[in-house]
Amino acid sequence: MSQEQEIEKSIRLMAEKAKLASRSLMSLSTDTKNSLLRQMAVALEEKKQFIQQQNQKDLVAGRGKGLSAAMLDRLELSDKVLAAMITGLLEVAALPDPVGEVLNLSKRPNGLMVGRMRVPLGVIGMIYESRPNVTVDAAALCLKAGNAIILRGGSEAIHSNLALAEVLQDVLAAFKIDSAAIQVIPTTDRAAVKVLLAQDEFIDLIIPRGGEGLIRFVCESSRIPVLKHYKGVCHVFVDKSADPLKATPIIINSKTQRPGVCNALEGLLVHRDIAAGYLPVIAEALQSANVELRGCPESVALVATIKSAMPSDWGTEFLDLTLCVKVVASIDEAMDYIAKYGSQHTEVIITEDYSNAQRFLAEVDASAVMINASTRFNDGGQLGLGAEIGISTTKLHAYGPMGLSELTTQKFIIYGAGQVRS
Image (cartoon, one colour):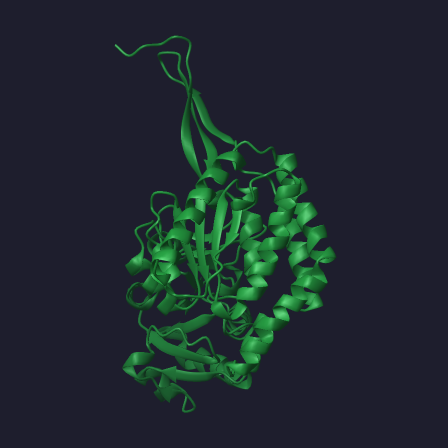
């Protein structure tokens, strides 16, 4: 049997086992799931030495491959990172369980009681390039929502991810729960990803998490529904009625708190009526924070330190201290610009005009639309979800940060008393 055939056989078997395990998870009580998560937190602490030994293998290999200091930092499972993972497990255990919640139960004219019940999605496939802590975070959320998960992390973290999965699986086995509920693909061969994406018979949803290239590859290759976001091109529109005392800290926070994340600001739109007075103020504040500004001809004419933007700059996710600036004539021009260059992630209006605020909320298409607040609030923890598995800029079936509820679906439930359809 060739290596490709071996990989195909192995991944298919993992998917079959995950599907079977998902059925057993559906009936787990909230108390059992919470006990599992708490015991997993204990196990991570008890197995810390084993996990860090395996993590060292990845770090040594990473140094040998010339990974940057930033990448090695993301890869390291330090005491601090492990402590955060343990805390994360306990936080998920403390969250309300969405599974089994009954919504909109009502009585039909024929006496039938009809409602909808939250149920697990089934099997989640997750493909990610992120830190190995994502392995535990994703597994915890899927388990609490009653889903089995197959994880395919980056090749640079293979030993770390397998070690973490082993610890979590041992806890499942101790509770006499099918350990196939949490699986990590054990090969770094890229062929495994394509095979995984073909298992539509067993896997219900794929969640990719990483760079735009990875996500586009997954979307183009998958036979399974994909929840994705390609990038975060987020904008702030400063309306003519904006309060500068609100606007400046919002813009600074949106851009500079963590410029390398998907909810960081990438485009600043300023209404023409206030641009002459406000643009020099905000430009000075941004440039004092080491932000490079690239602007339209009108903004360059108003502020000499703004560089002329190239056509390719508009709609770019810089993930750095670089920001596009454009002067717009109206809220309509601002919304047209957002529709053209935005990525349906996060859009903000700064305004004291109620009508404009409501128009912006209603007409701008993004997973989060905000009035007078930083783009950085588009985050599961900040929005009250407690934790998130990622942010979706698709609309089926989730839009925005995905917490526990977004890892479930709803089925109709009907209580009858012998009714037949005439």
